Length: 116
Image (cartoon, rainbow, N blue to C red; front, side, top):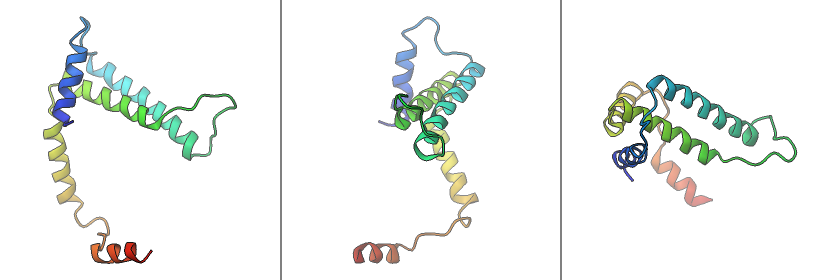
């Protein structure tokens, strides 16, 4: 599924209801809520705060999905094309950060993988 298709899918879902999209500020607050839920799951799984006995397991993947849904709602409500934004952001990273990180030596990485 492309980002455009995802935006259309979310729009079809939201368009079923008279309320439509929440206001942008409400969506940003929802995004913060969902990010908190993701942080909690990551902390339980990878951090130093285990779940309480009997507390149900959550899903990092589903929390990421919730965030993606809210981001898509925000983009749709503001008429932002996420594919265009993605291209612009990737271009920014490719130019601004091109010398920031240590490149992977493809020849070395491939030969090391074969040696294992």
